[in-house]
Image (cartoon, rainbow, N blue to C red):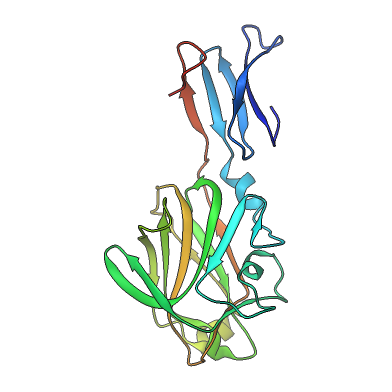
Length: 220
């Protein structure tokens, strides 16, 4: 089983393996159960461990945004470095659960669907007015139809300052896997700009699926 090219193999004794074809282009793990079952997909921890980016399109993740300043790129919110940050200077609309929400937004497309059960935002800047006050966490599997996972309001500059600029939130009730996650900042704390230093995630769910085949050709 490789990482760039992934091979499904079967065995009747756990020692001698026969390749049955390659699947997908993103990394996955394949575990042998018997000659008709395989587990396909990455663990949630493996996906999130690789969410330390060096560009807007790296490690299988894609970062998009409504706007960004040169040198304050959106992907900086996922680079694991609290010395860099994303800054946005405009707003646009996101339809969440049928409601149009106006605000600055930052989006991460995961390399595989994943169930997110928590997240952390670092937003302290020299201008505390750039921190989010009212914001949404939305999720999607197509990048256009959005479901609200969380809504926060009243997170003023003092709240961020008292927490050293970093706040963590639980999404323990979420059991659905999504490929896209979007932070929508409806209102910040008074600045013309919004800045996010880091946005990270936690998950207590695996991302594997159990696939079955009766002929080792067609998988369900």
